Length: 335
Image (cartoon, rainbow, N blue to C red; front, top):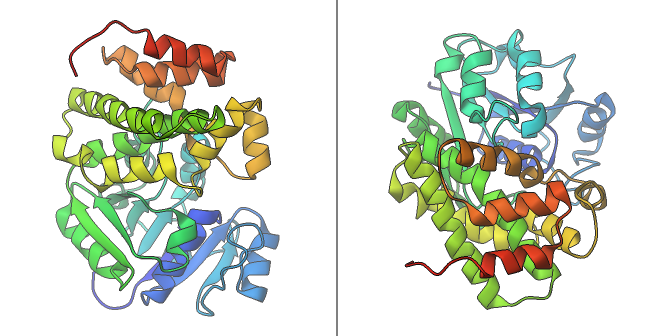
């Protein structure tokens, strides 16, 4: 792809908004496609998203559109920034309008519930050719709140098409946003799904008032769980020590911006998962993907004890302190 590019970002949440701003500032002719027409109208009128990142002024060149009236058909780049639990539904809804020659970039971190498929697999099944073969995934320690403020950030672009990934890398490289290319699409997507579950555990630790020793232990042993899952599916071990693995895990487990960490903290202090999301006003992907991650692990003989206890807490109402006791009482073993 050469010359200027038209981009459509499907999803007007925090990450979709921050990434659309990044694209617009990088010179792409960019629109945000919003579910609610009134949200799109407000963005066009005020150059701010009334629902997410409200304090961030958006470039005048960045426009917004509704699902019913947009320019997706002429976009050379389609960016998907929607929750995993509605991912296939929305992708199927936009597939007929998508430019079949477009490159497709997924920003969502999770697995599809029930099918347990990675989201790039969902895209490949639902999109027309050749777009279905032009798929990329972006992952890493990329909190929308910081990207929107141009705070220095590094990220990973994963694709089996390295030429396409390199094109995307060049498009979004700025003085504050540094992308790296990784051909390990499987590993990057599994990292993105599994790290959110460990972040829920880290948040529960915070909610119980535990300290740095506990959180460091969760991050380290959580990374071991992620790597075991990736190994089972042939992922590159280096992916788990990189930005999509360790990098994103650290950010998600420690940041005040992390939805999953905050959801875990709220649950530990007595909130139900639904109440936690309602209080945050945002989706915590781990609350959806935890079940899928655990089911995928169990079906493939992968041991993930932290993930198992997180699922017991959020889906079965198990007491958080009891879950901690179960983990600490596991049989001694070599590291």
